[in-house]
Length: 293
Ligand SMILES: Nc1nc2c(ncn2[C@@H]2O[C@H](COP(=O)(O)OP(=O)(O)O)[C@@H](O)[C@H]2O)c(=O)[nH]1
Ligand SMILES: [Mg+2]
Image 1: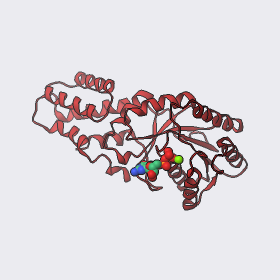
Image 2: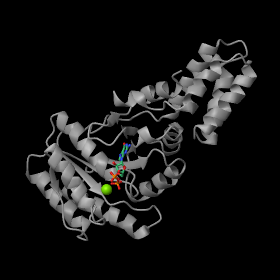
Image 3: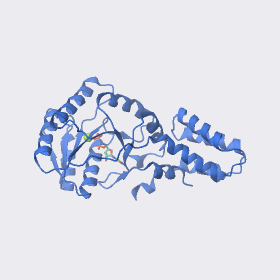
Image 4: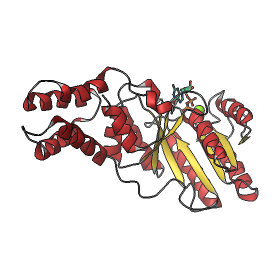
């Protein structure tokens, strides 16, 4: 599995090694606190984790127990998933949003591949008509993966691409439509309004869609991810996260901060640049990875 190679760098190894050291309980907890902060886990979460750990363990607790409790505290940060992905049977739409360069187009292709391998007939929409290569990039993926792509020339109204793709999705035998959008900064109101328009068009075809609206985050962007997520949530009902470029960061701690702050399930993680480099995210595996010795 591609994700098994994640977080091989210094900090996480140190977390588990804290418990293996000869230091006493207080020193270990202090060390641990520092390392969790260095791992990019936000201060309120670290404080809560440490308080939980102090409550459940004591000076006389075996170190293995401390590690077990730490795992549980980290796991408890993730919101319980209320439903599986694409829970409703039948046709579905996945909308991907996020800032420029976070990994939307690549992730759209990876998801298309993922669901294609699971027997779904997939259509992609290149609603990034903003960037010169926006549509071409997705079209190339489409060719490579034998997946149809609806696109338009640069500068065209992204709403019309969405409209055309929704029409194909509705009238033809596609199970899943994956819509790639243009990157937008969370500070640009007009682009955010454009996103609202896209959603409005989708809902005109089918009020229950998009079944999934995922914010794609570059896993290495750290704390900035929080402000992105808050803004995007305001303009589109984000109901999940896709963390791209998880392979490019040593600091998986951001994932924990984001999960805590946004109460949104992490659905997938990108772990490389090829179509197969997608990990169906599991909180449990993630915590194990962070804390493996
Ligand atoms: N290592 C790595 N690179 C990625 C991943 N996802 C995307 N990229 C790269 O990040 C860059 C931007 O990706 P792109 O999909 O074009 O981002 P977009 O602007 O949000 O559509 C490209 O060079 C991708 O190959 C990932 O999971 N891991
Ligand atoms: Mg793109």
